[in-house]
Length: 225
Length: 209
Image (cartoon, rainbow over all chains, first blue to last red; front, top):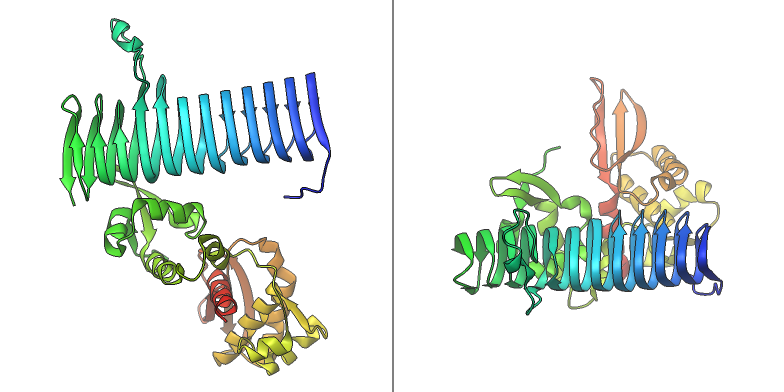
């Protein structure tokens, strides 16, 4: 990335512009960028729309953002709601809120607190605290920890409703070396050490080390390799 | 061109690497995305790999991991040319290209004495083709011309070099990797060289010495 460029793009209020190379991009209020954007700092406070790819060294999004292309950011902090139509790659991703990534998400460390919809997730360390209904096609990594926020549990009060409400995760495959799961529905879980907490429904577990399971969880099949 | 496939589970069992390692390598681009082949199995969608290339790659990563960092390794395996420059005496000294080959190629390259990675690769390919004994010097000159004019159009995507001959008439083709092609009767496919593999070989030579 060319860091010599010291230009700053700033939208305060309402505005739209074309993308390009910038040092810092600051969108406050309602901002729209019509093409690809490359910058060192990408800051959103309010609502942003990018009709292209975003490449940034660090991204800080507070509010709502929609990115039509893919996003690359070494570090990203998201407070609010973000939708990425392509894939995301970076090193550290912190989420407080809701995120939708249609494609693949590849990071070293993911720390999420909220509602996630991700195509495939690949990270060294995955820590997810569930809020609401999450859906991730595939999770792969070394350490995977999926928990539910302790304390308030609305689903018990809302059980009379036929719709599925509650904090849970739906996944097809979860593969990792150290896995801890709570309130997760998955077809296949594979790993070395697997711990299944409460509220899980797993089709098949294949493990090489240890398997611990909560009595309240349903496991159709488990196999030590 | 159906290749032997291996499932992810079998692969990990066979090589003794962990899920974490495999995924880390994938993120670092040590294993190309195209090798992750999704296929349906009785447990749903499963990932398969081309067996021979994947095992060779893992073996190589394991052997080199101690000397190089993962990022440096990624550079070795990536087919995007590295920003290296080398002069002709160095190339000859390191046994990458012989002096004759450089001379044969000089009409096309001009009297360049310093070669970038791409030019080094072309020389390396030429050397290889000439050494195989299947190509004459005149054809070799055509090869260099073809590469210089056409190779850049692939924009870093993997491609194969095909050399065919029929009754003394020869042709060069550059094809996207993995593309199938069929030839009329009497045509002999003399050489079929995956350039990505050659790049890897060349980078290994360059980094090891």
